[in-house]
Length: 374
Length: 266
Image (cartoon, rainbow over all chains, first blue to last red; front, top):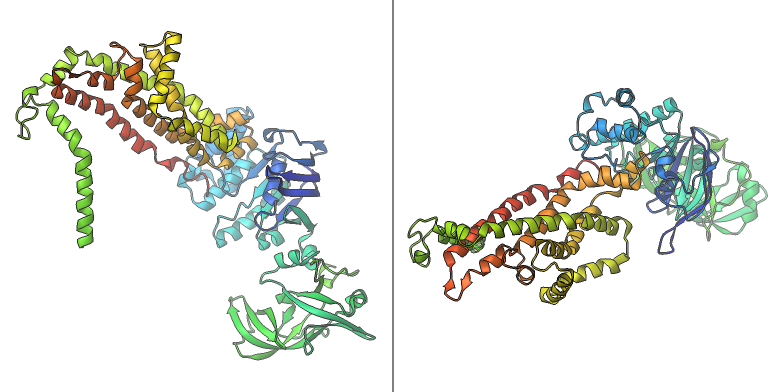
């Protein structure tokens, strides 16, 4: 069991380029943390620094309160599952799993017992004598997990372990990993750039960009309260609608003018906060899922929508269209399947809208969160 | 269709160009010396060239010299080449400059190196000895073997070593238990190529060896006398000299396939 703390941790490579910059994070014992971000954002480097595979340029890394900046990977008792699986090709599955235990001088009988237990847990019983080349992608992934579990480490670091699997297997393994975390109760740090994995697996997500830790929090909290356009965009598929608009306030409310004809009413709870931006041009962020085909709430605003394109995905429909010549992408339920050219009325939920500073991209602060996060 | 025929014709011609000289050597080694230049394809049959070469020209001694020098030089160079290649590949030791300097030594003409080598060996009393020749061949092989092994080590995913290190191995342990076994095909291929280089080397052997320590290329060159070239014996020597290379080439083909790492990643 392990708590992991990063204090101002930075990593600079030889070319004086920051890969990770002043990351501060405390991971509680038994927590499932997700590092989320695009390629090159520093999430894997952070993971490798925690594992001891990369040196820390500045800052402090503590595991269970002990500074481990200069502790070798083998002495940290942390297991890493790599994106490539990194199975030893010249060893059988059993030998792969036994390697870490042998390195720690464990007796042969104990090693065999632990391998049998772990193999049973992961359904690897029949594969113990095979070499990695004779395994499918899913089986290799399981072996990589087994090799990590069998050592009973104090924490697991998983570097995009599902990215090489097909969609169905990935969904299955996602569930398996969540179950595994519940069963083992160990600290897990999981690196991914997949939004679904991030939202469904972790207790907390940490979003990284250009080496910075941009935002961390519970998945739904971060989804509901993105700190900037980057986070809002990263946690939205299809992408969040980002549109320039002018804030106009009057005695009875605040509205956002996208054009002279197209305006959106700000939700009651946010009016007090947004009123101060009266007359300013800001960026409106509203997710495709906040538009609905039927009005289920009296506060939802009816908007005339002209359909220009439809992607029917079976379970839902991604519809592109315009509201008074302003382009929007909306996500509609599977029962609402318009065709291009249709004019329909959509109902927009004004609660989850976000306003961002047009220059910095930072969210314009609201003192009250939208209802989703409450 | 015409293109296919032309392509095959070209390939057959290329094969003939490659195969014909060794076939001619094999034929000439098996016919009496007096009939070597006969226009007949196979004018007669005789073992006399092989017998003469072995009994009168002490060819087995030279054969043994070549084997000892080639095998030992590779054995001496390989550990250094492996260590250096690994350092270049994984730790980027010395940066691009070190790599260039190492490669630059291969660009020097042999003639520029042979006299300094002779002076060094003479100072150490190692001229006319197999030990001296072995050391020189090891030094000549080192940059080449380092380069080959460096490329091979670069092809091994660093994740494998990282996995070993988080599994409890030291950096040396990761090299010993993971990198070396995975690199066996590369090590074998490099060793065979190094062996072939040493086996075929002529200039250094000519300058640094004596009558008793001469290797096959020098011994065969000695068959070119003032009375003419003893073509039958030369051909027999060439056939015997080719044999280890054929065996070595077979091993290269088998080992150079990097299939062993398949399945470890992705």
